[in-house]
Image (cartoon, rainbow, N blue to C red; front, top):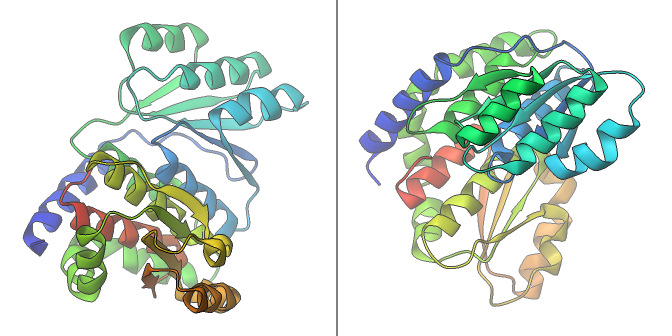
Length: 286
């Protein structure tokens, strides 16, 4: 993978992210919902809220519609990330939020016209993501929309975000071995820590689109239970490594074959770098 290709795609995605009309998200008490395929931006926004010390809840669209929204007495703001197309789950989640009277934002590519018409009747705010890289663009935008961490870390994070346009070359050089290993063998499973959830779901999507079955995506604490003989990818940050090193060591002892991706950056940008690594491995960026 040439860094120039990844740099070009990243530049395009950053432009697409900047063109998205930012929703007026609350500083606290946000329900973040995702449909299949739209997990990366949802997980990215959720983690950013947590690191800012704010209240947020993350749920899949079916879980939110059936088990969260019907039982809320108040009306939290709701943001639903969608992958576009014929996503009936997007409409189901929006309907439940509208019944509660919640301020609701639907973020993602255009849905089928019938579904877009239904959303228009519900009175929700539509935040359309356009361009060639909607998942990456929405994830980048979600990080910009979130409240900032407290103290000096906010300035450090801002510097990392400002340096993202030049991140592609660093990712390709720093993770060349992992990129080649992932590209050379179809993984059967992807294990992740919270900070790497956006990257894990993105990698699994790319692997599935490349052919064969889509890898299962599991929290890293289950790595030591992985099936031997099934290639896997383990993604985590250095911050999280110490808490889970016993699981990683136990997997090695059992003979589990896995590519180890350890990202030593701010946890809020680590998922983005993992997504870039995945795009480099599969030579495409949705």
